[in-house]
Every structure is written in structure tokens, then in C-alpha cells.
Image (tube, protein in one colour):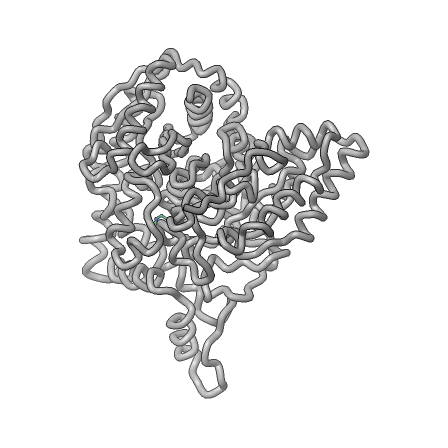
Length: 493
Ligand code: GLN
């Protein structure tokens, strides 16, 4: 079994916060650090397939700027200045193509940077390149990418999860110490779980979606990814905050994630109540995952936390509600890809009408899963079905939010498995969309409720020897709790 996990030594083995400190202390330059990750990419990425585009020159130029500031004794631009990052190719950038892993956007160059990208640049974070994903972020294995197959660094015959499999694989292989993902129904937490990395979906509205190609707008959130909890906390603070270009972004103070993570490092969880959701104890869950999660609860208890059972009956209906709402929003959001404005245009030979060109472009430009969702979503929103499907799904969504609210009356944080099994084999579920959808069962509820969640490594499953993720969920705008408990759990392992 070939593995491309993080090398034991060298710059690429170090956490981002350590690299940042070394850069500020003048022990190493940002150029050297950035080059080390670029070398790792050059060494393994042909086979691993995490990146759709590598921007070595641009990354090194950004690194040089940080080195210049260090040399001049200027204040660091951020706590992670000089440490490079892998960006999911769903966020638009002016200096690299943005494809959303779709043929539809082949050759598309954005005239502007996403707000999160602007913030990263201002923070002195060199962007190594754009990472692979399921087309338009729809999928659970990155197998829906129109360009390449990303593999799981722990076993190259297995999927890295999805949709953000590229970012997760880059982190788990030492190609990058920091990453950005987006999470509509689990696309940050699920790949984090499958690759043994940390991924956080912030509270809806906490991070700007401006310049993030829309999947399902009422569910999408951008979030930080890394190999340890503190690094995600530091990155969270850099990318979060109000943005007038995103009407759903909230005007509140950015949560104190890093302080919470530092507090958590003591490992002490006395007085913390952790909820265990009854509806998540499901027969279909892999034995090794169950064991690892049981061990996680036991560890949290040893660290002083109290585990309480919480009842969330509406979670049994989460699959149907999520996929109806997700597909409905997709059918509307993806209408803009018509061959007229962005990227691909097919059959425009002067003899065809605009409508024919649109149909030809959409027919060729979208992959099977995207088409399936556009068709089902359009159906769910059509006259006569809207009430039966879409409105019904919105009602379930309300019940899910109410179940969470009730659960949090009795606990501070909920802990659950991130995913029902460890990484599956490439190709195993491609012909079975329902099995693929089912894989997201545990990550979906909080997107519907807008709550923050984290996946933090919980060891390997004894039956497959592959990573398992513990999912932590907090009430809206209480993202800091995830970092407190996540860092404590990480420290206690
Ligand atoms: N796997 C889920 C889906 O296919 C979630 C995707 C995501 O979070 N972007 O919709």
C-alpha cells in the first residue's frame, strides 16, 4: 500500500504556527518554507493529484514580500505571515484560473479576488495553488472533478473525501500546512475526517462568501483547514469578519478562536458538558469508527467533561431535506453558466440561436452529477411540487434547528462521528449516488441549522487502520467552543 503521508522531518513536517514563528525570528525565510512545500508538490502531486493549478512564481513573490518585511523589522501582517496555503478552486483569484473543477469554467480568469483571498494576501500568506474538488463542490469523494482524481495520502487506492479532497490531501501529505475549503454539507469536515486532518465549518455568515462560486447559497461556508487545531484557529481569525459584499455576512466580532485553542491545550475539560446525539448511533456505522468514537467519548470524560445524551428526532429526515434544498438552490445558482458569460461556449458557429448554444454548452460543460442535481432541483421547485418538496424540506430544516437549540440547553458542545466509515476505495460508490449521499449523514444537520462544526482526528479505526474524525458542533457564533474542546481533545490523545 503506497502512502504519501507527511514526512517525519524537515520544514514540511512542522505546524504552521511554528513555521510562522521561525520566519519572524529570522531562522528561516518564507521563501525557503514556501519552496519546501513547492518541492513536495513537485515530488508527489503527479500521483496524488491534489492540485489543479500550482502558482509557484506567485507564491514565491508573496513569500519575498514577507521576508522583506521581516528584514525591515516591520510588524508581521498576521500570526501566520509567510506560511503558504492550498486554496480550494472554488474561490476566485486574479492570478490563477478558477475552474470549480468543471469543464464549464475551463480557461476562466476572474477579474477580482474573493474577499477571503484578499484577506489571505493581506495577511502575508502565499497561495501555493488551487486544489481539486468535486465539480462545483457536489460530491463526497472528489471523483466528480472533470480534471483529475485526487487520492488519499494514507492509501492511494482510496478517496480523500469530498468535495474538498484536494485541500485535505495536500495537508495530509505535507504539500501544504494550511488550506481553505468550503462546506455546504460536509465538504470541509468529511475530507478532514478521511485524511486525518483538521477542518472547520464556521457559523453561517461568519466568513464572507463573496467570490466563492455558489453551490447552495443558504448552506455554503468557507472555512480553515490544517494539521492541528491551533493552526485552524489562527487561520479562522484571518479569514472571518463582516463583508459588505456578502449580504449574509454578519456584522459581529470575530470569535476568539486562537485564545480558545490555547486555553484548550491544558486538556482540562472540567465543567464542560458534551452532548451525544441518540440519532447518530446508527446501525450502518463501521465498527472501527464506532470504537474510535466511543474511545473519544471516554477520553473526553477522563479529561473532565460530562457526556450527556441528547435527542434530535428530526435528524432522521436530514438526508431528504438537505438534498432537496441543496439541489433546488443549485438549479437556480448554476443557471448563470449559459455559455454567454463565463468560460466554455460550445457550438457558436454563427448558424445557431443563443438558446441552442446555451443548450449545447450546458450539455457538454456539466458533468453527470451536476446535471442530475439541476434536473432534480428544477423539478422540486416547479409548480405543483414546490409545496410538496421544497416547502416540506424547509419545515424539516426548521425542526432540525429547533432540535439543536433544545440540545444546547443541556450541553455546551455536541460530539459525534464526522463520517460513518473510513475512506472507501476509488470507484466504489460512483455508480450509486444514494450511497454517496448517505455518506454525509452526520455532517449535514448543522449546515441546515447554520451552526459551526469541526472535524478533529480521533486516531485510526482498528479494522481498516485509516483515520477517523471526531465531529464537534457548537451553537451559532460560539465557534470558539470548538477550538477550546478540539484543542483539549487533541492534547489529550
Ligand atoms: N457531499 C455533499 C454534497 O454533495 C456536500 C458537499 C459540500 O459540502 N460542498 O452535496
